[in-house]
Image (cartoon, helix red, strand yellow):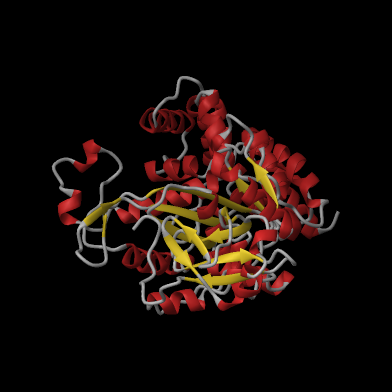
Length: 470
C-alpha cells in the first residue's frame, strides 16, 4: 500500500470514533446514490435530507465533498469542514456527540427545549472528557436541520402539513414561469380618494410569483373584491413589459420580470373558476391548475410573499395592522394619507427592493436567479399588446345596439365604427361587450361579422375616466 493511501485510511478509519464512523457510513449510503445522478434536483436533495436529518443545504455540501474526494466514507466524516468564518472547528468526537444528543433528546415527541438539550451536551462532554462547544454552536446546528424532518418527529401532523406541499413534495420547478402561484388578500392599510383625501376603505391586492426565481411577476391593487377580473388584470401585468406601467406611476425602478407563464397555480375560490378565466387561459395556452382541497399549504410560496408584503405595509401611515389587538388605539382612518395610485407606487419600489435581496431558499437574490434563468433558457415569451390580452379576461356584458350606441349603467358609448351596424341593428342579436371596471371610459364590442373587438368610448368625450366603484 503506498504512503498516500495509508495517510487517508489512518485519518479516517483508524482515528474516527465509532459514532463519527457510523455517521460517515450512513452519509455515504445516501450521498453515494445521489452522486450517480448527473443533476440532483430539489426533490432528491430533500429526500436525502429527510433520511439524514439535515438540511437541503447540508446535503449539497456533502455531495460536493463526495465528488471532490475519492468517493469513500471518509470523505463524509463529521468535523472535516472548516466550520465557517469566525467559528472554530469541531472535532469528530464532538460533532458525533451532537448528532447523538440532538437525535435522542431534541428530535423527540417530548419537544425538549434547546436549553435542556445543551445541558445534556455539556454533561456528556464532561463525562467523555471532550471540549464543551458553545451554546450558539448547538443553536446553529439545530437551525441547520431540515424543518420538515424536525416537525415530523417533534410536532403534529398538521404542523408537518404546513411545511410540506401537497403530496409531501413540491413539483420540481426549474424553468422561469414554468409555474406561477397567484393569490390575493385585503391590504392592511386604509387608502384615501384622489380629490378630497378622505378614507375610502382597504384595497385588495392580487399578486403572482414565479416559483423558480421567486420573482414577483404580477401585481394589481383594486378597491373591488377579488374576482375573475382581478386575476385577469394580474395575468396581463405578468405577461407584458412593465416599463410603461412604471413610467405611468412615475417610478424609476428596474422590473424586467415579465412573460407568459406555462401554468398558474391558484386556490379553489370562485373567482379562479370563472368561465372568463378558464377560456382566457385556454385562448393563450396557459394551464390552470388548482390546489388540492384541504391542502392550502400547496400555495405556500405566494402566501409567504403576501405575508412579507403585509408586514412591510404595517410601516405605512393608515395601516390597520393584522388584527384589532395589534392595532390598539391607533386610528387607521385618521392617519390614512395614501391613494391607490400612491400605494401602487410604494409597492412597485418595495418589489424592486425585494428582488435585490438574498432569498433564504435560493441563497441568491431573485433578480440574479431570473437573469441566470434567462441565460440558461432564454427570455420568456411576452405579449406585445396588454389591452388585446386583457380583453379576453374582462367581464362579458350583452347589450342591444341602439341608434345612439350602447348604454351600460346609464353611461352611453358611441363611435363612428358602429354606424355600419346601426343601419342593420334590427337584424343583429345582442352584442358581446367587455368593460374594464377600473376605467369605464371605453368598452370593447365584438364584431358580429368577425372575431375582433372594436373600442367604443364615452358618447360624451368630455367626461372623465372613472372606475365602476366611483
